[in-house]
Image (tube, rainbow over the protein chains, first blue to last red):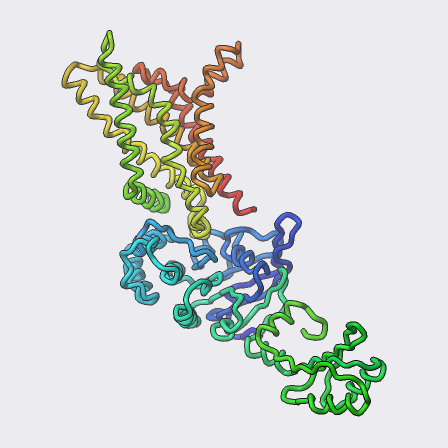
Length: 321
Length: 237
């Protein structure tokens, strides 16, 4: 998965965080190469924010370690923080400051000298298209512009690693597209980690995806591989009234059937039939049921959308991983 | 150090842009003037500022928490604390910056009262010693109250909670010496020493006692230390 030529910018080993007895994340391992855009994907409460907070040095892990640019986030915290640009989930802004003052302050506490800072403020205001609002109080900005200000702050000091927690939540669709394009532009020089629960975003922006569920890594792969892997099969859900002992082998022996699972509900068997991509068995199944004199109650093809892939992975259903 | 001044400067700018700065300035000026006038127009008028030094203890108990309540509470509420704590800034630099900013706001409410001193020199010939020591005492007393306010502000994301908590603590600390009349021996002594107001008395009389200076500095340092600890503890939650 990892490009062998790239040096790992981020190395996460056995990362575990407990809140009291509750494990927020458990034994997470991954590495990210320079210039990669990595997506953290998972439902709310999966542990994405916790993982990011540890990565940024906001809080220490219970076990395990994180190395950024070869430095440990706990032992060399101060040094590591210089390499990181961070956009937390709730965009942290001083509402009574103007965009420009805010950026100047953020640059100041990151130890940027005035010349560099001045140049970068102009740069990020242009990149994030905040020209019209640079002297506006942040409190008066709309959500989308606040988000941009947050991103501007994160990239201000040209960090090697950019960590963004749900950067496109709560802004309008046009701004979402703009933000994604912005993020896509960062890859190359910068290593980006972003979290999201929006699937298409991942395939649009990220070069690699980590799916986290209940604090554990469910899958790490390139987004196209991931969908390929899970889209390779199609599913049919069929309700048949008839003796399971006869129906099961009959279906299993049909050409093109990869796998059959049966659930019983009120004497009716619900069969989940997996077929290769493109094979349509509906007609043949209905014929089969008719020939044998069973009852066909329902026949429904199940489309595997990205959402379902995600759900399937996070449901940890056996045989789907 | 640069980080500290950056943070202090940011707070000072925000404070002096807000109407709060001027309201507090006006309130304190008015109260100080009132106490000053009642003291210099008494039966035996003295050319001193003692008239408003003692009432200031109660006024500071109420004003300091208002000056400091937003310093850390708001950072918690806005989420900017997370940003500060993931920036290459040490925790103590954050607290020190905030503290310096609060000292600036304290000075801003004391400076306007200097016209009272001008009035004294205009109409009489005041002894400048006690006036100077009085102001030093007020600054030290104010510093201690601000440190309590900052600590309270680190405990809650709600500014009102932070302010009320600080007011409560300060009230207890400033009236605790009254309890010494009911106590005897070492306990009474200890209570007298803990009291914030007790240490202000000699300053008002024109005596600068190292003990009192040390008390205020130790008290303030301890409170700021607790604040730094409170900030650090957020990392472990």
